[in-house]
Image (cartoon, helix red, strand yellow):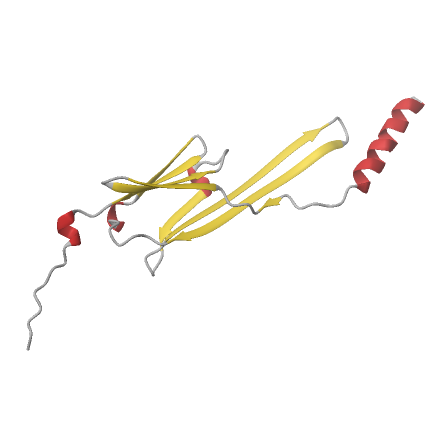
Length: 139
């Protein structure tokens, strides 16, 4: 049999946690995003600690935008012998389309994840590839 002080502590915890409002563990905040430019490329950086490359999906859309999607599910459990003290479910989802500048070489886009930061390298087209010059005949 449990001592009264221990039973009172358990009752207090039950009352306290049952009185808390139910909250969703879905995080809908957007990650911090940096976009930089150099002479040869643009770079997109998304900071989402704890993510891996498997959490991301990156693709070019039909209208030429870069779509970055993140979906991360976490299940953490901490338990005592016969009773949960805390059980947390976490779910993160993020999706954003980026309009690419005309000078991005869409065939050479690459991405990597390092220490919770997604790096997307957007190389610029060469000056030759950019010149679409054509003489227009006047009639």
